[in-house]
Length: 193
Image (cartoon, rainbow, N blue to C red):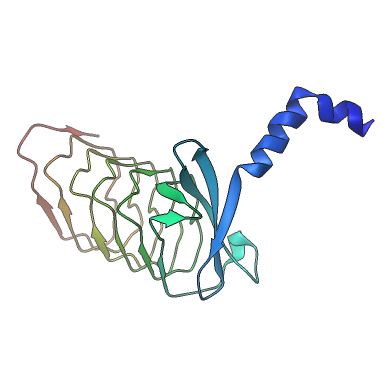
């Protein structure tokens, strides 16, 4: 029966999927899982963070995490959907090679205090940093074009600077308790949801 299943196209697709992943651990034992985006171009995306001792959703490690620009010969270019969701990191440093961030990538990271986003990132999708209750410092990418719905909803930022290239800010993007100052570097008309 298994030999019949293995010849099925669905099995081949599944088996191929299993080989398109790899992981890297930092010196603190925090594991980052990656999905290969393009084998020929040697590019990959962060798919999930996990602690070597606990499942990813229950990660209980606090501190700073620096993601390298290259892991196992693959350039890291994206953060996947919900990749860091619910983690307990305080500071995250992403490499300048990141140009894409998935929905809810950092949602509900309650201990996250600051993040510097790479200048190559052009969009912050829906709920990207929502309910990061400790998030008070965010440096937005210089080439940012759009900020999604509820991107920073529930954060405690008191000030934010909107980069000049932003053309769209969705409804609720900065629904933050305590937001007192918005500095806009935008000089052209833009869409405000």
